[in-house]
Image (cartoon, rainbow over all chains, first blue to last red; front, side):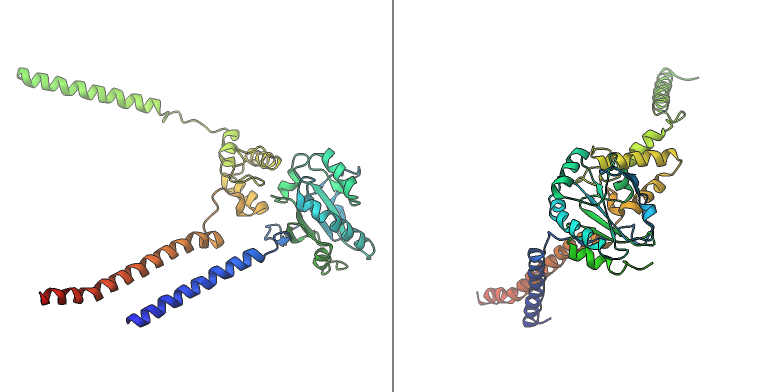
Length: 184
Length: 152
């Protein structure tokens, strides 16, 4: 390579590297970290793991009995700010779904939290859907949950079809369940 | 017949051999080669726990962490070991729940491989460019130096 060509090559290389670095900085700086993102859960496409037990509201619940309905399973904790952020959105979503024939059902699961703190949170947030207790963390372990809030959509077939981590909005959930609601 | 010096040398070698033999036997006995320690299920579960990442903590194994998620994972590992599952089967079961992020040292590949390879590539490429530029400058500077010597 002749010197002018070499200088041009180095300048071009530096330019490409510079553009990549600037693009990465812009991408990371403008990314909304306060929104839910989908993640590649190993459960996707598989039958939902066992989920049964006592709810904080009293009745016993078993996910297996909900076959034929779309169920949105949300692992959350009262101490987690993103969970506090999404809570009114999930309540709005759950309410909207009651107005749809065979709409999705919402199910909360306590993640790494005390039942006392969670009961206070439910009352404060006005959560109307059932919230399953998980004192030993076995349910969260079966579902491979590592941080709250983590949300799964279980189709009417009983298979896990979507997985999100981070705070969801009612709009996002509406769009996420739409392909599965009313489908058997 | 052996002479006095030869006798002394022979007995010296015999003493060395005897000492070496005693040391060898002591090491063999001490290492428990003939009575190997049989690992209990609990010990095997603990050794597996040390290779699994706590799901809800940073850089801790479930053996070190005390979060409810770690306790649940430890209970599952012990249950699976008691069922007679092999170490790889226990780990595969956990990977089917959490993905390979549950392992403290996930297998190389995918995005993690890129994260390791890219910095190395950048360093190698930068070094190559630097060496090439320096070599070129030296080469182009040499004839001028020789010309100066010729003038003198």
